[in-house]
Length: 256
Length: 167
Figure 1 (cartoon, each protein chain N blue to C red):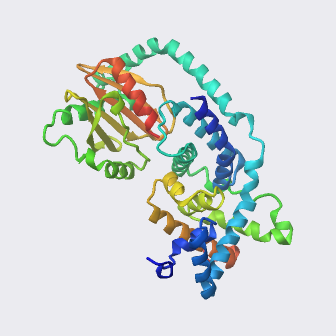
Figure 2 (cartoon, rainbow over the protein chains, first blue to last red):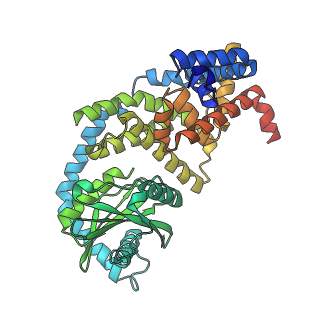
Figure 3 (spheres, rainbow over the protein chains, first blue to last red):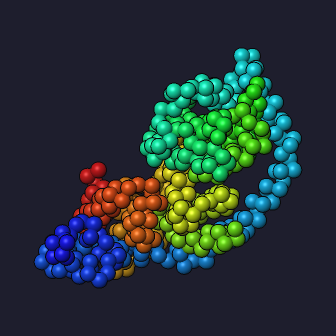
């Protein structure tokens, strides 16, 4: 295709105004603008906007960074917190485990269950129903991963990433949308090379507070659950606790 | 691993600039950046370079910002407009009048459009990187950018006060 036949699009005009074109592409837009004063005027206006916006906000990047935004310092603070947590971990896991199971079995007489017990209960129920399904375990299969991600992000009103757990030996089967007690929930299903299945259950959280991993054991199934920025998650499977914890960590780190 | 920490650190000035431009509030902006840094540093262990550290950081910042807005919407006693502080003493000098007008117009620009325009005009990201940050297709990015520029032009050229009285 010769350059003369190349039609100048709106996108070319924006790219020109943003200084993203060079060489022939730039010359082509310039020729176009010379013949179209209205377009030239518009591009000029965009350039003035860019200049005004840079003049307004540009100086912020030149300000000295306040100490609380110093990355190595934040890193050290987080490490200190983690060490503290790991010393407490054994005791804490036990306590929460008892709490969650009490919440599960004691629902009728213990008043309303705490939100985390509801989460685990629902996640485990959903796991029991769908992980044993042979023909219809998921609504959307893994070959439509992109669609699955977009769809569930939209329905949960959160940016959800489908975690990639292949390094832990798990491939994605797919996912589905489910009704939870407080609105929609997403369930992603994975399986290992023996066909053993694991599900990740996600609901939008009402407050964005993060929590540490907590653990519950319900008959044969084990669950790790946590809250993150805007979402609460439970990972359910019939797997050794250490393995499940490692997978939960991977999932946590990939869910933004 | 320390390398990622360095790359994260290099993003801080730009993140502050973007957060300030989104919120028009220096304290709130730095709170957002701090949350973003804690999150990125905590999650860096398994971060896989499917894009740049910079676009990853901006994506985290935007997620936190949007969740924050959602929380505010549920708590209406915290009006969003308390965020809006005009840059100090911009409108005293005639040459700066246009800047003050742009600052005001930016605050009435719909959030989607503001996010895009600032990534392109102030952060000077390529269209594909901006689309990656926002998690939208390139075509959507371009149409939002077009709308943002048209809206901003209308708001500044028609004069923001008039528009306000109509509303």
